[in-house]
Image (tube, rainbow, N blue to C red; front, side, top):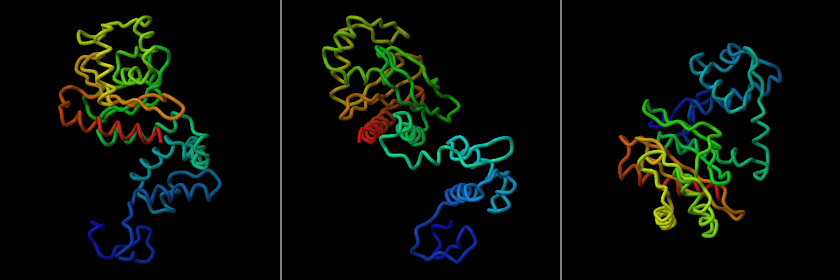
Length: 263
């Protein structure tokens, strides 16, 4: 492996790298080369031209181009590629980014670290709405539809948001909001929910135990900043992969992720 060699060749064919130089990742270099090449050409280019110019195998190039188009760093029209709107987004000020844009990379990181479905929800009245979601790559997985709305008591993200509300708003919720039972485990009783909220506030994370969907466990964490409640991150994990160790790791990652968005 290149990281174990004292001297490694530069991936782009120039002079050997120094032994003390930081290791590079070939796919990262190729990604940057593709962006720089397309932007410098200032005209639509086809994949074959990019592959020939940068000496990238077509099999690898196809994946990289697909990812760059998905993230809008390149735009595709037919077989041709040009610079995409995502490049301009990189130069914007932090306060110009939407909440969804700020949460998206953190949701992706959660999904990668746990390989479980991760989402960011925002409050809509007495419901939560999925603003960003990334689906697990496991064959057995839970998928969240973007824009999906669910009563606060149904998802772990909703419970986390509920626990972050002032007491008087919680009492208004308990008095006004319908709380359907999605499964036999759904908590609908007001007094039991009050006890659940107290536990969430103490532990910093909310949990659902097959309360919305049979066979699915949820862990969520609210995000609050100086401006108030932003929303909540959550992960959905099939019960067959869920144990105390997974719960502890998910809880820690959610707390850390929430702090990053709040900061």
